[in-house]
Image 1 (cartoon, helix red, strand yellow):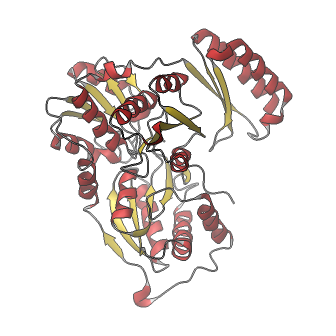
Image 2 (tube, helix red, strand yellow):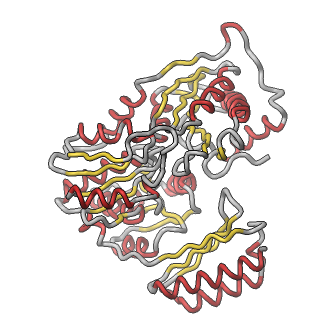
Length: 448
């Protein structure tokens, strides 16, 4: 059994990720966390979800499973993923749970757990949960009477998270005109209101969730609507979240995308100037643009590369003692403030920098030369073992020799699908597209 991927348990709701599986996960996780978790924590778990239609059925099953072990549940309702991390710490709970599939379409859903410290569960604890499930939950007790778990409807979760965000920013944003795209997701109930409370003039789009429109041609993975709205509204910038609001992508006043890499440069440079960038290091991933590494180096900032996935970024930050890390996709972690990627926190930090610097987002973003990248996803029968294939290694070597020091090649297996991802980066678009296609064709032939 291998249930947990890089971001919890995911699958099509009610076919792969069923109510029965959610119930079993709830029982197993509550048992393991109670047995192996921190002893001074409250025997309770915080549950939050995004706006997917399947969230209710999975939530009901999870709650039933958790309460059946004698553990209480704080039911926070629709809240961003980073809010669950914050509330888990604030309420001194043994764990937090998020029901979300992030930027995926509404048919998918996922279940991910946070430790009592608000971090992703370590691999060994996820493995322990799977072991308990493989044994058909035989060792999980069934308390009865007054010992079963209770459900506490925690409707003040959004307000507490909102106050937490406000406490992390100085000044007000009066005079800043902002368009916010909430992806019809968890940010809808908090981001526009929060930014208005901080003084910004806010136009909100994709803020009417109906259960099936989450991430539908909107949000951080579909920026076209936001780009158009920013230009039409003559806004200073646009902010886009994904379904669970742990990512941020921005758009400048001209409608140009400012992705996670450019945001990391803006944040890293600002923190270094303030004397707050621990170890003078920013943690990035192997997918981060070469232009980011070059721009950071020019500013005396070191980089630490990790595998793709915010959990690996956070692990790298912990190992290095860094306070800033993130991904091109917009997962940005401010280690001094929260324990996971937080799109809304990133938003207010960005607006604060714009106000203090008295510069536009376009001016700050242009400090980095972004190298062209091309990515090809190759469907394969088996995604493991490609590293040992001589033909694949030879075509990669030949392509890298052609690129020289002004480009790079990255081939990696998808964490969730039978795909090999071929990424080529360099200075010439035509060249990288041609080389990526050459490599992808060989991968497809050899692995199929």
